[in-house]
Image (cartoon, rainbow, N blue to C red; front, side, top):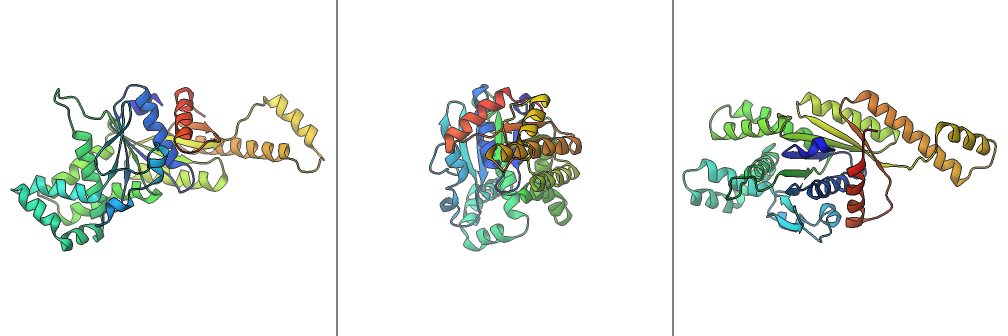
Length: 310
């Protein structure tokens, strides 16, 4: 966990239903408790109704009803924001066009906004440029506005989509300000001292298979893989000797809650061993917590403080 605190950006990804948003919010709370100035972010749609799409699981995990496309205070050292592709497009146009008025006029054009929202790679490019802007922001004293940006990516494919932007655009636009911005984004994504991806999964057969495949794809695109979190791991209080004694006691008995619990613990052990053997990154097991919303992420953040390799 301490390794994540040294980064500037953490990209959290995983299949739906594995607790990805919970882990992203918990990482942000954990880092804030360690004294880091943290900005926790999520991606939203780039259409004209982007502001209406901001209500999300991340907002609820942080104890809010919704988020905004500008950072809002959540707690000491912790802020949150919705990453709007439109804001990234606007910032990019302001940087490359000779006059700010021209950029603002371009973004007021419905046709241009629709094109930027629908054209392949352009929504992701808007998000990437917005991320760059937030990572670069500084205070009056020259220090970074946020020490750490934690991004809750909306789906497994988005981590790979962000990685594929540079190659796709550079083939079409190899020179000029767009190419320069793309290369800056690529440098951020691929620098292991700045960026780390986090994969979230569950201790079950299919989620572990999907996580291993995702880790392989991330590494193939040269995005540093920082940590794999195995979420909702059942509490296992037994030593090996106690485990055998419990199995002997349950053997031949009708199915009971205790037997199902032991089976779940066994599946979890197998899953942890499997992903530990397949992935080079640190594996962190997060115990199952029976809470919801902000209380859940508060508790998981505390677990992260003491969590070690699985």
